[in-house]
Image 1 (tube, rainbow, N blue to C red):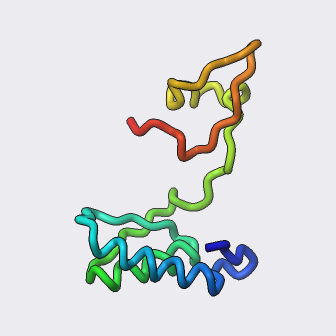
Image 2 (image 1 turned 180 degrees about the vertical axis):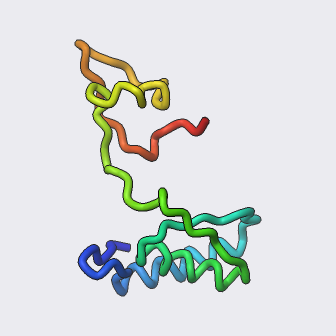
Length: 102
């Protein structure tokens, strides 16, 4: 759901969506789970972790990522986005979740 950034919590809609996610998660064969230290991420994960009877490892680096990356300016990341093409020396902005895992 739409997060409450000011209070770092889930909104009412976010709580409903996290509960629905927990129902879906119970149908999946999840392995290890990792979660951001942010309050809204912890609250979202809590629904699923309780439903599954497992715990998630909190990793500091899972905090906020910038929404978009301009590969024209961040050259060292270009190899992570192999399908991004340059036109006229400029790259299309990409979201970080498009990144190819190594």
